[in-house]
Image 1: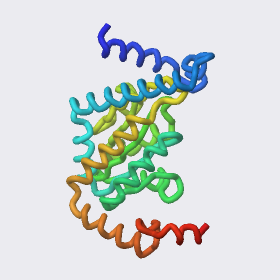
Image 2: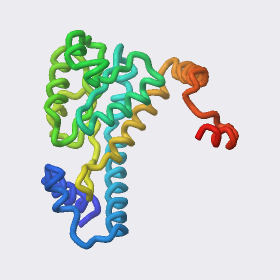
Image 3: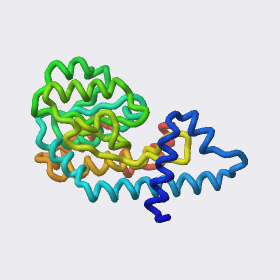
Length: 234
């Protein structure tokens, strides 16, 4: 059996275990040492990341998504549950170099507010992983029906929003742990923000302005602050 065939077989087995409870009983065998578990996790994460990057290099979906984001009038980012962390990560990077980047968090911006003013020039980037939160599915479907464009980051070509996506970024989240792997998703956030920022007009100016105001606001500890001053602050 080839490495790719073995990976596909392992992935199929992992996908059959839908809930964290099911995966816990299957993945964590009794009497495994911490060293053994660590080795298994590292091997699994390395494999999932390599497969994801290989496939994205071949299909060109990340550059396609970056072009959609750059060409959009407004950029919205959303995800529920664990996927909300991925949305926050991408939002932090994109908002540093692009204007009109909005995180749908239910507080500063709710799905209802978003859906009442969707334009064809708007793009929504959604993170939708198994077991596929219904809030995200409904939001993506309604946004698409209102005329906006969807960038979908998901773990399956058969995911509920896959057929509506203008750009579909598929990641491998197979894991030997009870929780699906976040490694490839975080890498995609980094890759997508890097490609977008590289072509964004005004990115250098925005970053320079952020540095200036961060210094004026005293957000970060000075790089060469004497140790004595640190001791006095304790």
